[in-house]
Length: 135
Image 1 (spheres, rainbow, N blue to C red):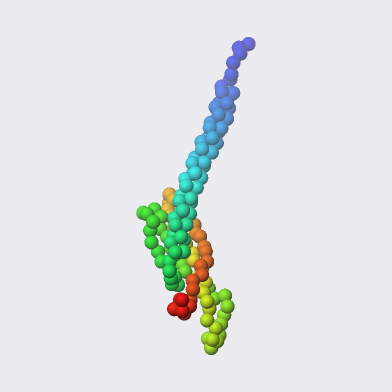
Image 2 (image 1 turned 135 degrees about the vertical axis):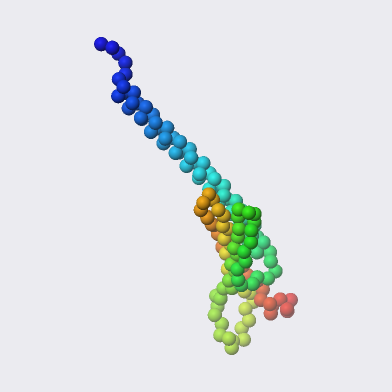
């Protein structure tokens, strides 16, 4: 009797090895893809943070939207809305000491063939124009 592997045993062993290698390669490529997305997302959050800081040092805010680019890959949109927490009748003599603004910053970028986005939101108070004239 000869000792050794039959052809079917070799084919099965190579099939198992091939499947194992495919799984390992897919894990590596998935890890690289997640790493790239994480880097892009972190970069977008840094850009959004810088834009939020810029909005927080402005002397005045106006309601509306602005758009621009950080670089060719990343662009931004800023939306500013005045919040009305205490509805006051128009005839009332009450003057608000400060205005509350809602700021939403969205950073958009292209990753491969898909467009991705992330956003930051914050609130900011500013003295009313009538109060600034008194001080």
